[in-house]
Length: 521
Image (tube, rainbow, N blue to C red):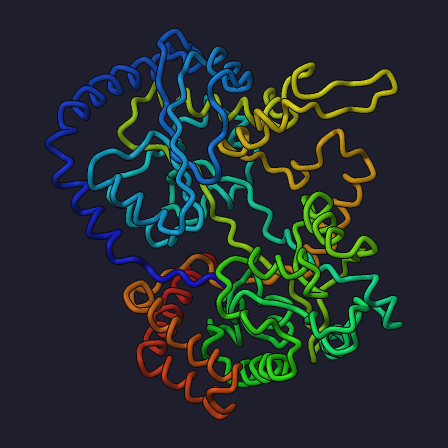
């Protein structure tokens, strides 16, 4: 359950970007206006050629992740030659990505393309209102395959009516699934758990019955990423009826922070797990689901989330370094008291946005590259170039070559734009069986999507103080779990959140919710 506390510095820098930056960009903006007026006129006369690539362009891009080798990379060379462009790529993979974007905006140095992903959705709306993004909707008539690739809701989400600021980026909402040490189950004579009570019994046995046979107290049941992260809370919080963020109850939106009964059950479960050593003692220190995931890889935890498209080359391999007999089994989230099952469900409003200051020629060139990347170029920026990155044998099997890892074509494709394909990491050389297994995992996960009933509505009060309220709320709940406070303080935490501004957030959200429903009735 990611909390969208808005960072005040964003607004500060943004104001600077569109005031102090005006003078230095006035000349460029004037040229852009003149050029775009001409292009628009030509377009209206059916003479504009969006696929005319005679003019060489440099396209700057800011993305996340580790740098990909650029020099002598045949995939980059192919794309650049085809579209007559040169890429200028900057990688920034740190937690302060929002602040970094704001700094670039303040200095007038925003790139041509960047990724809007984990950022606060209010940040997207504010920047859109101030004209930071290029509206690509009028240009999509020239790129029908690109428009058709993504569902209408993905184009529309976060955008004002009639505008498409950015191109949607596919993000599998229900990706991760639970893995359990099958060898530990076999050693202890236990079955894969189906309910939350059975889950706890198995996790308790993994902690106290020496499942790895070392004779030491060196195993735990499960880890966690804090108490309320959407990547890590799902099978627990959702099973007890907690909202992912907001839940429609009798026509009104209710946040998880106000669900006293459900919170009491959930926190009681976690407190018991902590007291009895079933829960990782460092759970409150984890800031990424992979932090908790390492407990499984290191042979310490018996149950944890994994990524189905990479478990075969990560956790399933890593854990064997600690125990050659280790085997993992994957299973659905356990059923809660009322039968609820929820799997980690990630936000799906990721977009690749284009700087509003680029020329129309450049905007079209970018969209053309995107369109190629999800059509004719899709297999190239996924599997690479035949003979360089893979080879096809006479029997039809495909072998990955070392250059694929060196040149990272799949990462290049992802950094450009992801196609709407949940199996984009089912590479040819992994075989049909792997693809079918992966598809089955995702089909299972989709049954247990943890819905957030908030249709991207934003409370002004939540923007201002929501982050602080949530931090204080989780701190108090964590103190209850680790025994520094009593269970009676669950109600204290709920009341404090409500009284310190939470109720105002609820009121504002439901006023917006009523308006939202009225416009769609």
